[in-house]
Length: 391
Ligand code: GLA
Image (cartoon, rainbow, N blue to C red; front, side, top):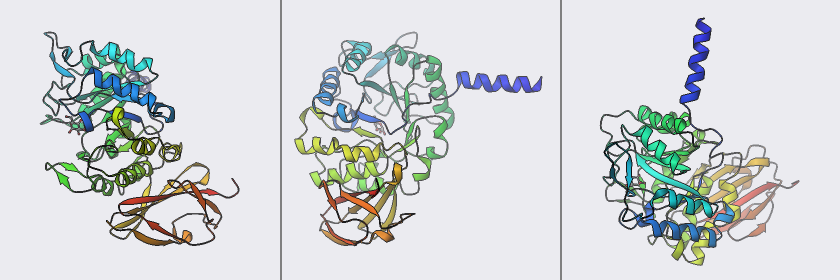
């Protein structure tokens, strides 16, 4: 009898409480409104324009799929507690916008907050989790980013689990993106609750430094990923925040370095620029298939740092079929000359027998029998793909 009760408890726990499995087997790819449009400039037309641009730019063809509305789409609640959409900014409502996005072959994402209010002061989901999850299911939402503002006294594991279970009960598979800025060390507990979790405070479109007291340049965020590699894998990713590629504070080489390092980290590739008005140089960074293949490699291993000389770093990412990506990152504002000795690259079964491709320059170089001397441009990267010669 005792055993039966235990089995029943297990069964009901699975019926009512789990994240949707089989989602985000590789890091999610898409676009989110926050980094460029923030609160005031997001509206229905912008979202439609971004969906159109994701298709016409070729981004959809290389794997970007989620169009995610961040904060500021909500305006209040009805008398019976239902979340209300800002009808001035989104005159046709969320279902119609979701239909539009789906008609383009893309997926639809939305944002809320575990507390009483979102970070921009809109209604949060606290005590309305079930109702909100039902609204999202009605609107055919595919992705939810769930923030952590105005949560005084709340326990993160409990709050995020309540929303996970509400989503599950509502019945529509939704990628659940946890955003507590790494405060509760979500990498230690969130694998059972969400598909990705933010590891730091907000990114800003700067190379380094702190802005507004709590926003970080992307290289500062990069350093905070060291040691987190063991927590990432298919269906559960560290999220070093959305991309700033294409936003005005980064030059082209800085943006290329940022994108490359996010691919090395197996980070979610959620772009945050104005896709309708991006330059060809920026588009070419975002749609580089070989870089994206490193991010999306099915092995799902996050890259890690193997050399740290202060302003010069080397990172490595293990890929399927024994392939390896090696990335040299120059953090200085002058070029860096470096001689790569492949045998010291922390490659487990190193046999000197890899073919090497310089990915951004799109050319094959010597194999790993020989040392290679390279110049890494200022604030830029060189990334090499090493594949077994027999392949
Ligand atoms: C927080 C999040 C950001 C963004 C804003 C919206 O700061 O970390 O990514 O969602 O809230 O208000």
